[in-house]
Image 1 (tube, rainbow over the protein chains, first blue to last red):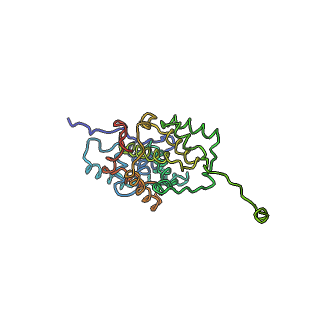
Image 2 (cartoon, one colour):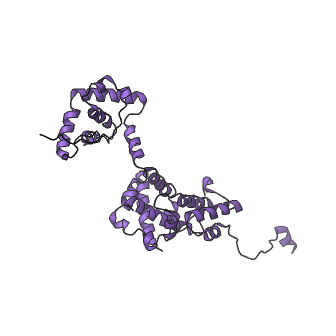
Image 3 (cartoon, helix red, strand yellow):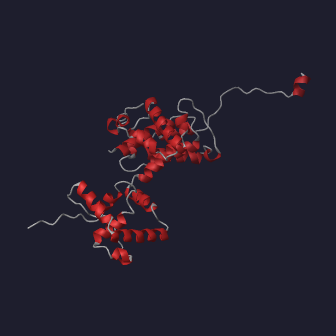
Amino acid sequence: MTAKPARRKPTVPIDKAQLTPAMRGLPNDMWRAAAVARFLVKPGYGANTEAARMAGFGANGKRGNLRITAHGIFHDPRMLEALHELGEQYLKQGVPDAIAVVQEIMADTKHKDRLAAAKLFIDRAHPVQTMHTVKVEHSPERLMEATAEVLERIRQLAIRAGVDPDEQVELARPKTIEGTATEVKTDEQRLAD
Amino acid sequence: MNSAWQTELLFVAAVKRWLQSDELPTADRVYYLEWLASRTGPITPAVVAGIQPADDVSMAIVAEAVRASIALDDNGTAMFKALEQPVVQRLIPSPARGGGHG
């Protein structure tokens, strides 16, 4: 007795309530999953193979075999018809290839954080650019007065962030200019002298 | 901790370096503290507290990586690619060792 080839559970959701005619005409749900997956994978070389893998084809098999299977599936006239219909459906919904990008972002929980981190360093690059020669540039959106409320906020944030709150408040406190005040006479006063 | 988190430790060290400056505009200080305070996952306040401010070498590496991304206008892709190189990752402060940069 020959063992049935192992199948992975498809990782692609299929909305069976809204199958297009060509999708219904595909041999089984793995094929339908492959059709949907083809719009989720990164376009380009290897996209067919990756879509087939996502659909559950090629479990326990060699990558080369999966590539052959994927070629067969995605060149089948029934699949081509299904892809055509799905593509039209996505276009009508206004979510063509961008769907792949959204899926990628959703799949990677750190993606948003990484982008935010990148922006921290890219958008506010001036401390990096001026780390040796301190040159402070005040743009309107970055002006903030170190009021008592702001200093308290700095203290609270510093505690939450795990940095020395007293040091942060001290560094943020407005600087007093030391010196001796001298009276400046007007031109008239100087002439009178 | 994977390379993405390791790189974030380098960012933490760099931000702590900037926070040491008394020339930092107040708005920037608040912004950076908010960023530090909003770290998640393994970057806990205790971990942040254990990271020393970045040294000159680390800051120079970050600066070069940032410049690459600014030049390419790629939202930080080149920066992360550079900072996640194994040779750079070895410079990243380890909270387990209590930092190491300063």
